[in-house]
Length: 257
Image (tube, rainbow, N blue to C red; front, top):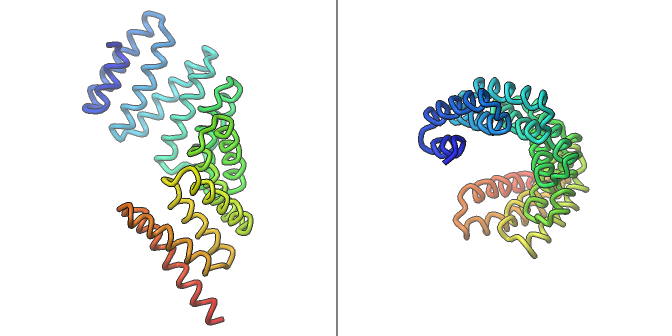
């Protein structure tokens, strides 16, 4: 078993021990001049810091690894570390920096003709922009992720990226467009991905509410609720029920006016 494989195995049970093995292995490989394997172990060092809840230590380790990658001109490892940066910054609530790191990684992966990692990074960046209240940027990168996943025929991930587009459109005040796109996603889910249907219905219900159509929102949210209840999906059931209640309130206000 390689040093990295051993450290990764230990991550599941003893992150502190994994960190010690990874650090020792990284130092040894650097002394031997094996920069490539040292870079791989550096990512394990970062993962161990995250597992220990040490985000500051993870950032320091990731920055050290990033500087080595840039000196060596290793673009792939640079992009991989930028994704790790994005994940850490997301954990610490620094969504703008997270989004910038993720989208930079996506551009690098795309230049390396690695569409899957480019798509995943674009999706990560879109989610971070959305969380950081930057819907225009979120929409741009969600569209990019959706296109890339489409070229890979990865329907589930394509639909997940389309969902980010819908949420971004709602935040941009484009509720009618959001409703139109959400309906398309619901139809695709009915035909190909029932597992994602409840979330798609909730997104459509939210779009209906944003476009002042609470009656449609109520029917859609109810359908999502019933599916989740049948499948014993308690979290989905709760999220759907919240939309049902919001739709009821909006409908009552409409009737009063």
